[in-house]
Image (cartoon, rainbow, N blue to C red; front, top):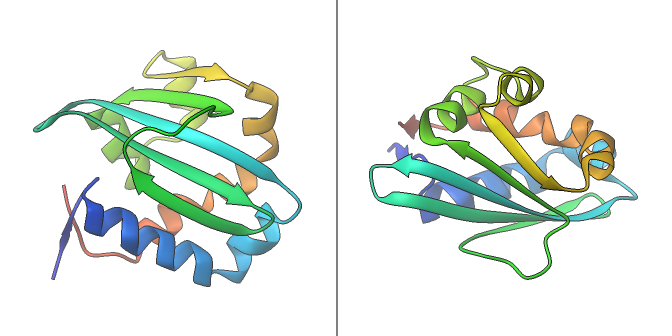
Length: 128
């Protein structure tokens, strides 16, 4: 049964898949970060979810989080294209489709781990 992109069920399944991934764990080992994703222009309006990486494990949830290391903002279409690996985050950033407030250095360090998100999403049955 498909899960709706950016829904509570989508977040729960993505979290489960990332925590089960040895590749994600190895790429995120030794790092700690809290990221807030802000998706504008969704059918429900603005959607926010957070990701907390802690030494190879991940926690995620819908809504805001206090003191994020970085806030990543993009519109719905950009978020969906990145989730489907149709555009990469660097291209989205360079073309102004993705904005970052906070620690760019930390995000660069997390590139390998964050690159596992679209791979995990590709294994999911997602309704965009």
